[in-house]
Length: 302
Image (cartoon, rainbow, N blue to C red; front, side):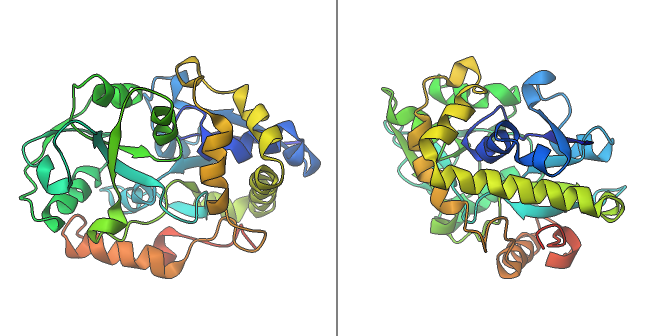
């Protein structure tokens, strides 16, 4: 058995369901793989998933496209590259409380934003505010990553960035009422999140194993569309205590259409990626102008 390690971008949630299904249903084992799935709670997000790939601690990381750009353009570049997308459309949004008086992004001027400290994140949110007619004067705070969601619910921050198919589902069954601002509604051509990332050089060395991992993972995600109740039951075993109340079948209902099909699962569209790369360059969030081929590869999807 070939041993591979995957670092999740968050504690187990609906975006990870295909990995756990592939593991439980034996899809990895069928292709001669033994896959260890790690999540940030193991070290309280002390080391990011992408950094774990750079350090050689894992083979794969889940991260947003921005992480790939950041690693490719840092002072000492690392060959992190996206090999597959989990969702074919962006299901994230900036969120505020429904009774906050914040009715659109421009109202976030001089408000508190709870940030994950990602390299381009704060700039993206400020551009959203500007696109809505605001000044982009945002007060940014950096809490413990795994506690960011609670800073909004407790009123310690006015806004943060969430997944509508996870935290958005959590609040459907609570007393909290939230309002969401999606990137595409404010002229931001946001790219894929999360993506499966790996070291480009390691792909060359381990093409057979890495392609097998993607093949089995794809099978896991497509199984979720065919057997949602069974898939949700598998994921339930991995959900941390603080998320136990989330309706997993509802979360999967919102997510499954965006997993793609047999032909499109994992797809990374060049135009979507290039539009985002061009946008962050034009907005001076990044000084290097990159293109699709520098941060994405479809080699493992073939």
